[in-house]
Length: 447
Picture 1 (cartoon, one colour):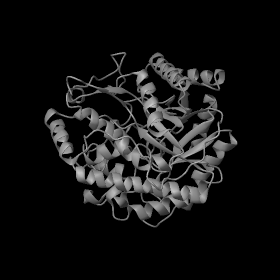
Picture 2: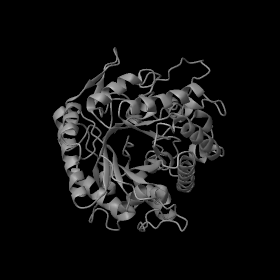
Picture 3: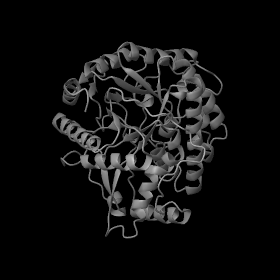
Picture 4: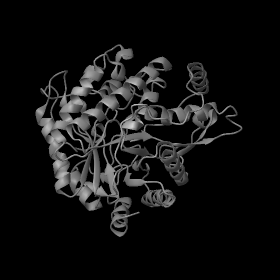
Protein backbone atom coordinates (compact mmCIF):
# COMPACT_ATOMS: atom_id res chain seq x y z
CA UNK A 1 0.00 0.00 0.00
CA UNK A 2 0.99 3.64 0.10
CA UNK A 3 4.16 4.46 2.02
CA UNK A 4 3.92 6.33 5.31
CA UNK A 5 4.29 10.07 5.12
CA UNK A 6 7.44 11.51 6.61
CA UNK A 7 7.58 12.41 10.29
CA UNK A 8 10.37 14.94 10.49
CA UNK A 9 11.73 17.82 12.53
CA UNK A 10 12.45 21.34 11.29
CA UNK A 11 16.25 21.00 10.92
CA UNK A 12 15.88 17.78 8.96
CA UNK A 13 13.37 19.25 6.53
CA UNK A 14 15.46 22.35 5.95
CA UNK A 15 18.47 20.12 5.33
CA UNK A 16 16.39 18.10 2.89
CA UNK A 17 15.43 21.18 0.91
CA UNK A 18 18.97 22.54 0.83
CA UNK A 19 20.43 19.21 -0.24
CA UNK A 20 17.91 18.71 -3.00
CA UNK A 21 18.20 22.30 -4.15
CA UNK A 22 21.93 21.86 -4.75
CA UNK A 23 21.34 18.48 -6.43
CA UNK A 24 18.79 19.95 -8.83
CA UNK A 25 15.84 17.97 -7.50
CA UNK A 26 13.46 20.83 -6.84
CA UNK A 27 13.53 22.58 -10.17
CA UNK A 28 10.17 22.72 -11.97
CA UNK A 29 9.09 19.37 -13.42
CA UNK A 30 9.24 19.34 -17.22
CA UNK A 31 6.36 17.84 -19.17
CA UNK A 32 6.97 14.19 -20.01
CA UNK A 33 8.36 13.42 -23.45
CA UNK A 34 8.78 9.75 -24.43
CA UNK A 35 12.25 8.61 -25.51
CA UNK A 36 13.08 8.60 -29.21
CA UNK A 37 12.90 4.78 -29.29
CA UNK A 38 9.70 4.49 -27.30
CA UNK A 39 7.81 1.22 -27.46
CA UNK A 40 4.76 1.65 -29.69
CA UNK A 41 1.76 0.28 -27.84
CA UNK A 42 -1.48 -0.73 -29.50
CA UNK A 43 -4.67 0.98 -28.46
CA UNK A 44 -6.39 -1.03 -25.73
CA UNK A 45 -9.89 -2.18 -26.60
CA UNK A 46 -12.65 -1.40 -24.14
CA UNK A 47 -13.34 -4.13 -21.58
CA UNK A 48 -15.85 -4.45 -18.75
CA UNK A 49 -14.82 -2.13 -15.93
CA UNK A 50 -12.23 -3.59 -13.55
CA UNK A 51 -13.73 -3.68 -10.06
CA UNK A 52 -11.05 -5.21 -7.87
CA UNK A 53 -8.95 -5.12 -4.74
CA UNK A 54 -5.30 -5.85 -3.89
CA UNK A 55 -2.89 -7.42 -1.41
CA UNK A 56 0.89 -7.41 -0.93
CA UNK A 57 2.91 -10.56 -0.31
CA UNK A 58 4.93 -9.27 2.67
CA UNK A 59 1.91 -7.73 4.33
CA UNK A 60 -0.32 -10.79 3.99
CA UNK A 61 1.59 -14.01 3.51
CA UNK A 62 2.74 -16.37 6.24
CA UNK A 63 6.16 -17.90 5.57
CA UNK A 64 4.75 -21.39 5.22
CA UNK A 65 7.84 -23.05 6.73
CA UNK A 66 9.70 -23.06 10.02
CA UNK A 67 13.05 -21.39 10.76
CA UNK A 68 15.80 -23.78 9.78
CA UNK A 69 13.87 -25.13 6.82
CA UNK A 70 15.64 -25.19 3.47
CA UNK A 71 13.02 -22.77 2.16
CA UNK A 72 12.85 -20.37 5.09
CA UNK A 73 13.53 -16.87 3.82
CA UNK A 74 14.11 -13.34 5.01
CA UNK A 75 13.70 -9.99 3.32
CA UNK A 76 15.34 -6.61 3.66
CA UNK A 77 12.29 -5.55 5.70
CA UNK A 78 13.04 -8.30 8.22
CA UNK A 79 16.60 -6.99 8.48
CA UNK A 80 15.30 -3.44 8.82
CA UNK A 81 13.03 -4.56 11.67
CA UNK A 82 15.99 -6.27 13.37
CA UNK A 83 17.71 -2.87 13.39
CA UNK A 84 14.67 -1.19 14.95
CA UNK A 85 13.56 0.53 11.75
CA UNK A 86 10.12 -1.10 11.72
CA UNK A 87 7.99 -3.31 13.96
CA UNK A 88 8.71 -7.01 13.35
CA UNK A 89 6.19 -8.66 11.10
CA UNK A 90 6.68 -12.21 12.38
CA UNK A 91 6.16 -15.40 10.39
CA UNK A 92 2.37 -15.63 10.27
CA UNK A 93 0.98 -12.65 8.38
CA UNK A 94 -2.72 -13.28 7.78
CA UNK A 95 -2.04 -16.70 6.22
CA UNK A 96 -2.69 -15.66 2.64
CA UNK A 97 -0.03 -18.16 1.55
CA UNK A 98 -1.06 -21.31 3.39
CA UNK A 99 -4.77 -20.50 3.34
CA UNK A 100 -5.33 -18.60 0.12
CA UNK A 101 -8.76 -20.18 -0.26
CA UNK A 102 -9.93 -17.88 2.56
CA UNK A 103 -8.85 -14.89 0.47
CA UNK A 104 -10.58 -16.36 -2.57
CA UNK A 105 -13.81 -16.82 -0.64
CA UNK A 106 -13.62 -13.17 0.45
CA UNK A 107 -13.07 -12.08 -3.15
CA UNK A 108 -16.13 -14.03 -4.22
CA UNK A 109 -18.20 -12.33 -1.51
CA UNK A 110 -17.12 -8.95 -2.87
CA UNK A 111 -18.03 -9.89 -6.43
CA UNK A 112 -14.88 -8.33 -7.88
CA UNK A 113 -13.71 -9.29 -11.36
CA UNK A 114 -9.99 -8.46 -10.83
CA UNK A 115 -7.51 -9.17 -8.03
CA UNK A 116 -3.91 -7.94 -7.69
CA UNK A 117 -1.44 -9.87 -5.57
CA UNK A 118 2.34 -9.88 -5.25
CA UNK A 119 5.02 -12.54 -5.50
CA UNK A 120 7.68 -12.61 -2.79
CA UNK A 121 11.08 -12.73 -4.47
CA UNK A 122 12.74 -13.99 -1.29
CA UNK A 123 10.31 -16.92 -1.07
CA UNK A 124 11.11 -17.98 -4.62
CA UNK A 125 14.88 -17.42 -4.24
CA UNK A 126 15.72 -17.61 -0.51
CA UNK A 127 19.42 -17.78 -1.29
CA UNK A 128 21.11 -16.59 -4.42
CA UNK A 129 20.56 -19.12 -7.19
CA UNK A 130 18.50 -21.48 -5.01
CA UNK A 131 15.02 -21.64 -6.54
CA UNK A 132 11.90 -22.86 -4.78
CA UNK A 133 10.02 -24.44 -7.67
CA UNK A 134 7.12 -25.41 -5.41
CA UNK A 135 6.61 -21.74 -4.53
CA UNK A 136 6.53 -20.82 -8.22
CA UNK A 137 3.92 -23.51 -8.83
CA UNK A 138 1.85 -22.27 -5.91
CA UNK A 139 1.85 -18.68 -7.19
CA UNK A 140 0.76 -20.03 -10.58
CA UNK A 141 -1.93 -21.99 -8.78
CA UNK A 142 -3.21 -18.86 -7.03
CA UNK A 143 -3.57 -17.16 -10.41
CA UNK A 144 -5.34 -20.22 -11.82
CA UNK A 145 -7.79 -20.37 -8.91
CA UNK A 146 -8.65 -16.72 -9.48
CA UNK A 147 -9.27 -17.23 -13.17
CA UNK A 148 -11.38 -20.32 -12.55
CA UNK A 149 -13.47 -18.19 -10.18
CA UNK A 150 -14.02 -15.61 -12.92
CA UNK A 151 -11.52 -13.16 -11.41
CA UNK A 152 -8.69 -11.79 -13.56
CA UNK A 153 -5.36 -12.05 -11.70
CA UNK A 154 -2.79 -9.24 -11.79
CA UNK A 155 0.73 -9.96 -10.51
CA UNK A 156 2.98 -7.38 -8.86
CA UNK A 157 6.58 -8.51 -9.40
CA UNK A 158 8.06 -6.20 -6.74
CA UNK A 159 6.08 -4.80 -3.81
CA UNK A 160 8.81 -3.12 -1.72
CA UNK A 161 10.79 -6.18 -0.56
CA UNK A 162 14.12 -7.68 -1.65
CA UNK A 163 15.70 -10.98 -0.56
CA UNK A 164 18.10 -10.45 2.32
CA UNK A 165 21.02 -11.67 0.20
CA UNK A 166 20.73 -8.44 -1.79
CA UNK A 167 21.19 -6.43 1.42
CA UNK A 168 24.79 -6.56 2.72
CA UNK A 169 25.94 -4.73 5.83
CA UNK A 170 27.23 -1.97 3.57
CA UNK A 171 23.88 -0.26 2.97
CA UNK A 172 25.25 1.79 0.09
CA UNK A 173 25.28 -1.49 -1.87
CA UNK A 174 21.84 -2.70 -0.86
CA UNK A 175 18.67 -3.23 -2.81
CA UNK A 176 18.58 -1.23 -6.04
CA UNK A 177 22.29 -0.42 -5.68
CA UNK A 178 23.47 -3.98 -5.13
CA UNK A 179 25.91 -4.82 -7.97
CA UNK A 180 24.07 -8.10 -8.64
CA UNK A 181 20.52 -6.82 -8.46
CA UNK A 182 19.74 -6.20 -12.12
CA UNK A 183 21.00 -9.56 -13.38
CA UNK A 184 19.26 -11.38 -10.54
CA UNK A 185 16.07 -9.42 -11.22
CA UNK A 186 16.02 -10.36 -14.88
CA UNK A 187 16.28 -14.05 -14.02
CA UNK A 188 13.63 -13.71 -11.31
CA UNK A 189 11.15 -11.95 -13.59
CA UNK A 190 11.60 -14.50 -16.36
CA UNK A 191 11.02 -17.48 -14.08
CA UNK A 192 7.91 -15.89 -12.53
CA UNK A 193 6.42 -14.98 -15.89
CA UNK A 194 7.19 -18.41 -17.36
CA UNK A 195 5.43 -20.04 -14.40
CA UNK A 196 2.34 -17.79 -14.44
CA UNK A 197 1.80 -16.61 -18.02
CA UNK A 198 -0.80 -19.26 -18.78
CA UNK A 199 -3.26 -17.51 -16.46
CA UNK A 200 -1.83 -14.01 -16.02
CA UNK A 201 -2.18 -11.31 -18.67
CA UNK A 202 -1.52 -8.19 -16.57
CA UNK A 203 1.84 -7.62 -14.86
CA UNK A 204 3.01 -4.78 -12.62
CA UNK A 205 6.83 -4.61 -12.56
CA UNK A 206 7.00 -2.40 -9.44
CA UNK A 207 4.62 -0.98 -6.87
CA UNK A 208 5.28 2.65 -5.87
CA UNK A 209 9.02 2.78 -6.55
CA UNK A 210 8.83 6.58 -6.24
CA UNK A 211 7.83 6.51 -2.59
CA UNK A 212 10.16 3.66 -1.64
CA UNK A 213 13.16 5.43 -3.17
CA UNK A 214 12.53 8.67 -1.31
CA UNK A 215 11.92 6.97 2.02
CA UNK A 216 14.90 4.65 1.64
CA UNK A 217 17.64 6.96 0.37
CA UNK A 218 16.62 10.40 1.63
CA UNK A 219 14.57 9.94 4.80
CA UNK A 220 16.06 6.71 6.28
CA UNK A 221 12.45 5.76 7.01
CA UNK A 222 12.46 2.56 4.89
CA UNK A 223 15.17 0.12 3.79
CA UNK A 224 18.03 0.56 3.22
CA UNK A 225 17.65 3.29 5.84
CA UNK A 226 20.00 5.93 4.39
CA UNK A 227 19.66 9.59 5.30
CA UNK A 228 20.17 12.41 2.82
CA UNK A 229 21.95 10.55 0.01
CA UNK A 230 20.73 12.46 -3.06
CA UNK A 231 23.46 11.02 -5.28
CA UNK A 232 22.61 7.46 -4.30
CA UNK A 233 18.92 8.30 -4.59
CA UNK A 234 19.36 9.36 -8.21
CA UNK A 235 21.43 6.26 -9.02
CA UNK A 236 18.87 4.00 -7.38
CA UNK A 237 16.10 5.67 -9.35
CA UNK A 238 17.95 5.08 -12.60
CA UNK A 239 18.53 1.42 -11.73
CA UNK A 240 14.91 0.96 -10.68
CA UNK A 241 13.75 2.43 -14.00
CA UNK A 242 16.11 0.14 -15.92
CA UNK A 243 14.76 -2.84 -13.95
CA UNK A 244 11.21 -1.78 -14.76
CA UNK A 245 12.05 -1.64 -18.44
CA UNK A 246 13.83 -5.01 -18.22
CA UNK A 247 10.71 -6.55 -16.71
CA UNK A 248 8.41 -5.03 -19.34
CA UNK A 249 10.59 -6.44 -22.12
CA UNK A 250 10.75 -9.91 -20.56
CA UNK A 251 6.99 -10.03 -20.01
CA UNK A 252 6.35 -9.15 -23.64
CA UNK A 253 8.84 -11.76 -24.85
CA UNK A 254 7.11 -14.45 -22.81
CA UNK A 255 3.54 -13.31 -23.49
CA UNK A 256 3.17 -10.84 -26.39
CA UNK A 257 -0.44 -9.99 -25.55
CA UNK A 258 0.39 -9.10 -21.94
CA UNK A 259 -0.39 -5.69 -20.46
CA UNK A 260 2.17 -3.73 -18.42
CA UNK A 261 0.96 -1.40 -15.68
CA UNK A 262 3.14 0.99 -13.72
CA UNK A 263 1.79 1.79 -10.24
CA UNK A 264 2.78 4.97 -8.41
CA UNK A 265 2.04 6.74 -5.16
CA UNK A 266 0.38 9.95 -6.28
CA UNK A 267 -0.83 12.26 -3.54
CA UNK A 268 -2.35 15.52 -4.71
CA UNK A 269 -0.05 18.36 -3.62
CA UNK A 270 -1.59 21.77 -3.08
CA UNK A 271 0.50 24.87 -3.66
CA UNK A 272 1.08 26.92 -0.50
CA UNK A 273 1.56 30.41 -1.91
CA UNK A 274 2.59 32.10 1.35
CA UNK A 275 4.28 29.19 3.14
CA UNK A 276 6.19 28.03 0.04
CA UNK A 277 6.80 31.26 -1.93
CA UNK A 278 9.54 29.78 -4.14
CA UNK A 279 7.45 26.61 -4.73
CA UNK A 280 10.49 24.58 -3.68
CA UNK A 281 8.49 22.13 -1.59
CA UNK A 282 5.79 21.84 -4.24
CA UNK A 283 8.34 21.17 -6.98
CA UNK A 284 10.11 18.62 -4.78
CA UNK A 285 6.85 16.71 -4.30
CA UNK A 286 6.07 16.87 -8.02
CA UNK A 287 9.46 15.30 -8.71
CA UNK A 288 8.65 12.56 -6.22
CA UNK A 289 5.39 11.88 -8.05
CA UNK A 290 6.70 11.84 -11.60
CA UNK A 291 10.48 11.41 -12.05
CA UNK A 292 10.65 7.62 -12.11
CA UNK A 293 7.37 7.30 -13.98
CA UNK A 294 8.68 9.65 -16.68
CA UNK A 295 11.55 7.21 -17.23
CA UNK A 296 9.27 4.22 -17.90
CA UNK A 297 5.89 5.56 -19.03
CA UNK A 298 6.54 4.73 -22.68
CA UNK A 299 6.70 1.01 -21.76
CA UNK A 300 3.35 1.06 -19.92
CA UNK A 301 0.00 0.07 -21.37
CA UNK A 302 -1.75 1.47 -18.29
CA UNK A 303 -0.84 3.83 -15.45
CA UNK A 304 -1.85 2.77 -11.95
CA UNK A 305 -2.75 5.57 -9.54
CA UNK A 306 -2.44 4.91 -5.81
CA UNK A 307 -4.30 7.81 -4.24
CA UNK A 308 -4.99 8.21 -0.52
CA UNK A 309 -4.80 11.88 0.40
CA UNK A 310 -4.16 15.47 -0.53
CA UNK A 311 -1.69 17.64 1.34
CA UNK A 312 -0.42 21.18 1.37
CA UNK A 313 3.11 21.32 -0.04
CA UNK A 314 4.85 23.27 2.71
CA UNK A 315 7.49 22.55 5.33
CA UNK A 316 5.07 23.44 8.13
CA UNK A 317 2.54 20.84 6.96
CA UNK A 318 5.21 18.12 7.08
CA UNK A 319 6.30 19.13 10.56
CA UNK A 320 2.88 19.57 12.18
CA UNK A 321 0.62 16.70 11.24
CA UNK A 322 -2.81 15.88 12.68
CA UNK A 323 -3.09 12.39 14.08
CA UNK A 324 -5.76 9.94 15.09
CA UNK A 325 -9.30 9.42 13.97
CA UNK A 326 -10.93 11.95 16.25
CA UNK A 327 -11.08 14.40 13.33
CA UNK A 328 -13.60 13.32 10.69
CA UNK A 329 -11.46 14.86 7.95
CA UNK A 330 -8.42 12.63 8.64
CA UNK A 331 -7.54 8.94 8.73
CA UNK A 332 -5.88 6.94 11.51
CA UNK A 333 -2.50 7.88 10.01
CA UNK A 334 -3.26 11.60 9.89
CA UNK A 335 -3.86 11.70 6.14
CA UNK A 336 -6.29 14.38 5.03
CA UNK A 337 -9.36 13.01 3.26
CA UNK A 338 -9.86 15.04 0.07
CA UNK A 339 -11.85 13.12 -2.60
CA UNK A 340 -11.48 15.96 -5.12
CA UNK A 341 -7.74 15.34 -5.05
CA UNK A 342 -8.34 12.06 -6.89
CA UNK A 343 -10.13 13.92 -9.66
CA UNK A 344 -7.21 16.34 -10.05
CA UNK A 345 -4.64 13.53 -10.09
CA UNK A 346 -6.61 11.63 -12.75
CA UNK A 347 -6.77 14.76 -14.89
CA UNK A 348 -3.05 15.38 -14.39
CA UNK A 349 -2.05 11.83 -15.34
CA UNK A 350 -4.36 11.85 -18.35
CA UNK A 351 -2.91 15.13 -19.59
CA UNK A 352 0.69 14.12 -18.94
CA UNK A 353 0.75 10.56 -20.33
CA UNK A 354 -2.40 10.05 -22.44
CA UNK A 355 -2.78 6.44 -21.38
CA UNK A 356 -5.57 4.39 -19.82
CA UNK A 357 -5.59 4.67 -16.02
CA UNK A 358 -6.45 2.25 -13.24
CA UNK A 359 -7.06 3.48 -9.69
CA UNK A 360 -4.89 0.70 -8.33
CA UNK A 361 -5.16 1.68 -4.65
CA UNK A 362 -7.56 3.92 -2.78
CA UNK A 363 -8.34 3.33 0.86
CA UNK A 364 -8.71 4.57 4.40
CA UNK A 365 -7.26 3.42 7.69
CA UNK A 366 -10.22 3.57 10.05
CA UNK A 367 -12.30 1.57 12.50
CA UNK A 368 -15.46 3.39 11.46
CA UNK A 369 -17.61 1.57 8.93
CA UNK A 370 -19.61 4.72 8.21
CA UNK A 371 -16.46 6.77 7.60
CA UNK A 372 -15.05 4.09 5.30
CA UNK A 373 -18.22 3.84 3.20
CA UNK A 374 -18.35 7.62 2.85
CA UNK A 375 -14.68 7.64 1.77
CA UNK A 376 -15.22 5.08 -1.00
CA UNK A 377 -18.51 6.58 -2.18
CA UNK A 378 -17.05 10.08 -2.48
CA UNK A 379 -13.86 8.94 -4.23
CA UNK A 380 -15.81 6.85 -6.74
CA UNK A 381 -17.93 9.93 -7.42
CA UNK A 382 -14.76 11.89 -8.26
CA UNK A 383 -13.62 9.04 -10.51
CA UNK A 384 -16.94 9.24 -12.35
CA UNK A 385 -16.49 12.99 -12.66
CA UNK A 386 -13.15 12.45 -14.41
CA UNK A 387 -14.59 9.72 -16.66
CA UNK A 388 -17.44 12.03 -17.67
CA UNK A 389 -14.81 14.59 -18.73
CA UNK A 390 -13.09 12.07 -20.99
CA UNK A 391 -10.43 10.50 -18.76
CA UNK A 392 -9.96 6.85 -19.73
CA UNK A 393 -10.25 5.13 -16.33
CA UNK A 394 -10.39 1.33 -16.64
CA UNK A 395 -10.62 0.14 -13.04
CA UNK A 396 -10.97 0.83 -9.32
CA UNK A 397 -9.21 -1.19 -6.58
CA UNK A 398 -9.87 -0.33 -2.93
CA UNK A 399 -6.92 -1.08 -0.65
CA UNK A 400 -6.98 -3.75 0.76
CA UNK A 401 -8.70 -7.13 0.97
CA UNK A 402 -8.02 -7.83 4.67
CA UNK A 403 -6.46 -5.97 7.62
CA UNK A 404 -2.74 -6.71 7.65
CA UNK A 405 0.76 -5.59 8.64
CA UNK A 406 1.25 -1.92 7.79
CA UNK A 407 4.99 -1.42 7.18
CA UNK A 408 6.46 1.06 9.72
CA UNK A 409 3.12 1.17 11.56
CA UNK A 410 3.12 -2.56 12.28
CA UNK A 411 -0.04 -4.41 13.31
CA UNK A 412 -3.38 -2.95 14.43
CA UNK A 413 -2.48 0.72 13.90
CA UNK A 414 -4.19 1.19 10.55
CA UNK A 415 -7.18 -0.92 9.54
CA UNK A 416 -7.40 -0.66 5.75
CA UNK A 417 -9.07 -4.02 5.11
CA UNK A 418 -12.46 -4.57 3.52
CA UNK A 419 -12.40 -7.62 5.78
CA UNK A 420 -11.15 -7.78 9.36
CA UNK A 421 -9.07 -10.75 10.50
CA UNK A 422 -9.82 -13.29 13.23
CA UNK A 423 -6.46 -14.36 14.69
CA UNK A 424 -7.83 -17.65 16.06
CA UNK A 425 -9.77 -18.94 13.05
CA UNK A 426 -7.96 -16.90 10.37
CA UNK A 427 -11.40 -16.08 8.97
CA UNK A 428 -12.02 -12.91 6.97
CA UNK A 429 -14.96 -11.02 8.46
CA UNK A 430 -16.68 -8.53 6.11
CA UNK A 431 -16.74 -4.93 7.31
CA UNK A 432 -19.61 -2.57 6.50
CA UNK A 433 -17.55 -1.16 3.62
CA UNK A 434 -17.11 -4.67 2.15
CA UNK A 435 -20.86 -5.21 2.19
CA UNK A 436 -21.39 -1.78 0.65
CA UNK A 437 -18.76 -2.39 -2.05
CA UNK A 438 -20.28 -5.75 -3.01
CA UNK A 439 -23.74 -4.20 -3.40
CA UNK A 440 -22.30 -1.25 -5.32
CA UNK A 441 -20.50 -3.50 -7.83
CA UNK A 442 -23.65 -5.53 -8.34
CA UNK A 443 -25.74 -2.41 -8.90
CA UNK A 444 -23.21 -0.57 -11.08
CA UNK A 445 -21.12 -2.98 -13.20
CA UNK A 446 -20.04 0.10 -15.18
CA UNK A 447 -19.17 3.34 -13.35
